[in-house]
Image (cartoon, rainbow, N blue to C red; front, side, top):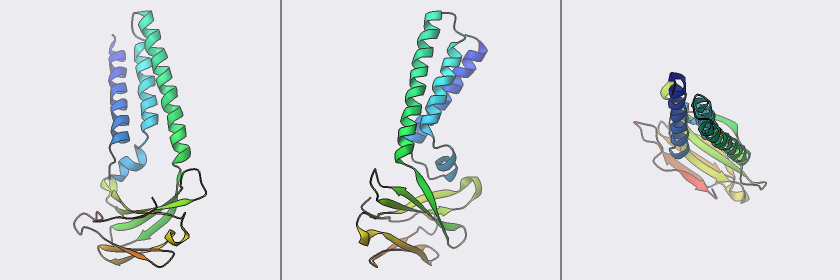
Length: 188
């Protein structure tokens, strides 16, 4: 094999490893969650890189076999990614600023195929490339009383989440890291 083929094979292995890592391991680093959390695209890239690396092989039957398998793998990864994307689309609903460097992120998504929506809350500790984000709560509006209403900071390391019927869910944050000690969820 040529140096180019070996380099492409190594790049394919790295891309496939990164795809597996972000698919199976949920990181709290914002950089990984928002910018590298594309396992199906990374898997398709790994397939295309290995097909390109196989183009440098001497045996034609092996080139064709690897090319066909890699093409099928890339198509399968892209199709699975499109299906996953259609069922997991999330839109930003805003931020609630807290004591520096914390803020609460609000996101909204559809609950399956129905008309229900789910409100996702997370707490973010800003720190440049090392910013972290943790789940805070999840509220599905299929029961009208369980619909998310508001969230407010009640102290430097405590948050109160309110639902439509007036119930509140106090959540304490670890003062050192900012990670929530508990989470709140209704119908999620």
